[in-house]
Amino acid sequence: MESESDFGRNFESTAAVCQFYPRGTCVKGASCPFRHVRGDRTIVCKHWLRGLCKKGDQCEFLHEYDMTKMPECYFYSRFNACHNKECPFLHIDPETKVRDCPWYDRGFCRHGPLCRHRHVRRVLCMAYLAGFCPEGPNCKFMHPRFELPAVQDMQPKEGKKVMITCHFCGEGGHKAIYCNKMPPDVREAQVRQEIEGNSHATHHMNMHNGPPPRGPQKPLEEVTCYKCGTKGHYANKCPKGHLAFLSHAGGSGSATQNQNYRR
Image (cartoon, rainbow, N blue to C red; front, side, top):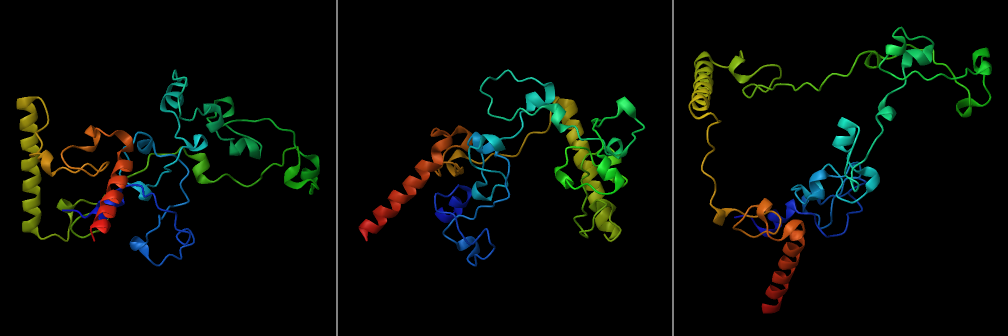
């Protein structure tokens, strides 16, 4: 059974923020009684907005209502329209996402009006072309760039590729069933097991028009709600809503006071 301290790690603590953690000088680590909050988070957690974030202080997104750091609205970014008048998410103009063409800024772009980047006409600074501009970066005219654009500016961005890691040798680039370091008899057993598993799943989907059923679920008596800390229901069925962790913190505090009073 999980202790109360271990279970409370999934919650957002109400303690003060540790002043040594942002500077990297906190020596207590996980045993520190204060909160270790990261300062590099710039986007509000969309799961926390619905009361469904399990990570608490360890979440890589912000747990605070900051309208300037809200995630981008999916409907406005996808369809350029959002019919929710009280939409809390950011509506970013698609035109502002288009980058300036590095080749056009250099002087010439072969794609012309068909370029996927933005071509902005500017007036060249004659003093800069002559060799020196006293205004520097504050000049109202254009200072052309003569260096060649980087490779990532010329090629479209591709999707992030997932690197496969072998579970047998730990090296990347291949699966365990194709690992050359695995003994032949073990590899044959792995291949046979995967073929049998795929054939069983295909047979079940053909017979029942659906995926194979899941394993036996845990009884509700053994399920602990990570919101309120009580057993008997899942977090998505919690009757106390998204503020259940407050009652959990209050309940643990009252229980501690009762124990101290009995002593």
